[in-house]
Image 1 (cartoon, rainbow, N blue to C red):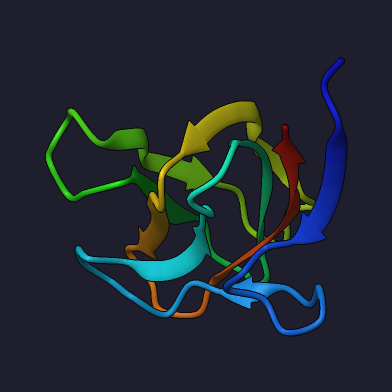
Image 2: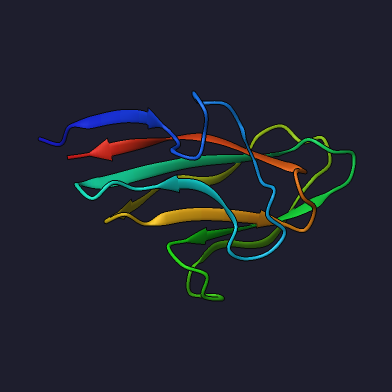
Length: 116
């Protein structure tokens, strides 16, 4: 039987939103998976500015399009959290990073479930 344990994203401080400050690859670190088991990632993006901003999320590397979960996705101005990743599984120390067309316009929130 699988055992799930939840945790905050490793790029977060105590579960607080992660501002996407990078405007190009490699992006701001959102989460790095552990070496054991799989992790299910749940990521949400909100735009905290009055102008729409784009978001690109890199899963593991910077290859375009191979490593992009989301590429130049437009997040509306002053948006509530928009689901970006809803249970995608990763393992083996994979780094998830994000960048935006506008520095600090988008905040990422969410959690990771370790599955063993």
